Length: 113
Length: 112
Image 1 (cartoon, one colour):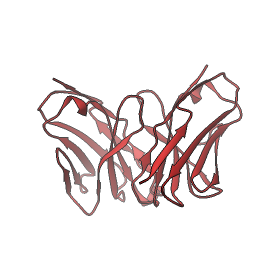
Image 2 (cartoon, helix red, strand yellow; image 1 turned 30 degrees about the vertical axis):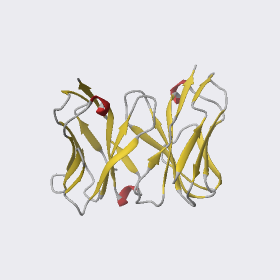
Image 3 (cartoon, each protein chain N blue to C red; image 1 turned 90 degrees about the vertical axis):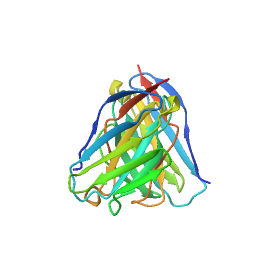
Image 4 (cartoon, helix red, strand yellow; image 1 turned 180 degrees about the vertical axis):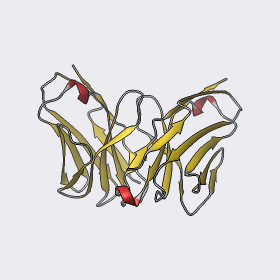
């Protein structure tokens, strides 16, 4: 089945700096890649997603890039703010696994003022 | 707009006791529904999903079961809880199988 690896597991940046989180996937048929932000004690919230027919997608300070050949995708957060501190999860979905979302293990992002 | 509710928010249960967690979705019809478990410091593990009333698919064999008695209601149950059942249980919904999944607020279960 699909295997999603996420790095780093923890990331600390200063306010205003950029943060990058990377994920790799194993199933070349995967075609949907969402990113979720989870604050302590809450459910994950979708922040951005990308489908395999697109290489990059941007939404204000957040962007996601996808490299289908290398089977990796990345989340980029620019001009980080303390409220960006949370755990971020990537996921991949493939028709080979019934379109179930396979999640990475998460990245704990800390933005210090 | 659509909203998803989970009840209860927290639960402490003794080993061997039964379990019933409820998830309801408002503002949509015939959603796909999902149950995930999140262990401390780990990712989300899909437990069950349902594409319609009475239709349940299990992803991981265990002592948990799921039921969908109504279109927008999804229930996670157990007859006898184990210590290893402790975790954060999340319900999610999507319009279709290839659509975005939206998560509920979760239930924190502690089995003692």
